[in-house]
Image (cartoon, rainbow, N blue to C red):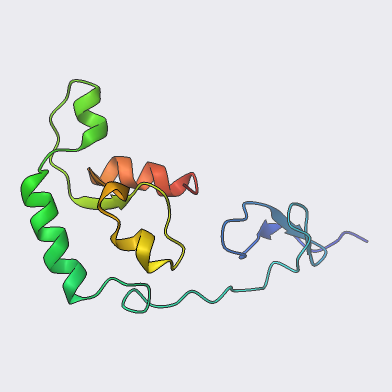
Length: 112
């Protein structure tokens, strides 16, 4: 008798396939939906929005595009080192860079 059809694991960050109830990569049932606090709880408050506007006003171009010789407008203030809830690292000025949406999505898609 054939097992259940495979499906993508629903665990955050896992790209494994679940077959017969177990993910081949992370070993979970693949049904676990990890809790992630809302954006306000993660620090993205009105204070951050004001800071973000000012930062992008002073740094209007994507730093990755600039190093490649292109000029694309920055739309995201990226945390170079993920803060993971550390508010000191969240607000550390040297941990911020201006990125375009494409480069930010590429970076976050890699789990950086």
